[in-house]
Structures are given as C-alpha cells and as structure tokens.
Length: 142
Image (cartoon, rainbow, N blue to C red):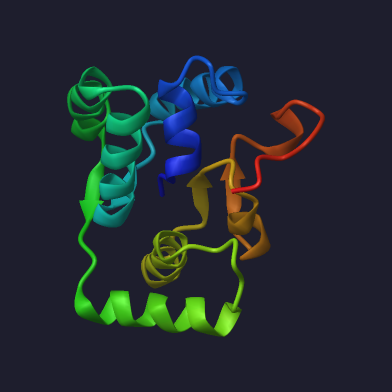
C-alpha cells in the first residue's frame, strides 16, 4: 500500500528522505509486487504535489506512478470504519487518510506499506523503506 509520506519524498529532491525513498521505490517497482493506493492518498498527493512542487509534479504522478498501481476506491463502509478508528485512537497526529489506509490494508490482507510514517509500524504493518535504512536522527513527525 502506498502512503503519501514516502511517495511525496520520492518526488521532492529537497525532502530529507528523498534519497532513501527514491532508492526503495526503485526496489519496490523491480519486485513486481502488486502496488495499491487508496483514492484518498491520491487526493492528498495531488494537493501536496500541486501546492509544493507544481503541476509538472502532478503530471509526473499520473505518467510515472499511476500506470503501475491499482487504486482502491474508498466506499461509505470503509470511510465510516476509518472515521471510527480515528475517533477511537483520539490522536492529533493521526489522519483520516492514514486510518483509511490501515482499514483498507487489514481488509485486503496487505502487510506492507511504502511509507516513512511511523504510524504504520505502530499499527503492526511492515514498512518500506525499513527504518534501519533511514538516516539516523529525527523521524519525520508524520
């Protein structure tokens, strides 16, 4: 499952995690594992890329990422379950988009996320890039 945190870092060469995520993204593509992304993550990516990097970055997302991934469309049931999970978690630093990904991953039996967001590990998922591959120092507070 793709997450905004790592995917954005691949696009932004000035991002602290760009090198690690770009290398890991190449490995993910070569692994030929099925790649999934929720439409909520895509909306988040569009907004973030457009605002920070411009329309060329949004076009690159469409041309170089979306052909390789399958979009999981969030329906009312998934949305409500994610809202409930967010309310139960009662954490300021957790988003509805992340909770939607967690619920979706559990429903589909997906165990690994392409992310640098610590919340995925806290929820029991494996993450790529692995934490030990990341630079020592502060974690992105995502």
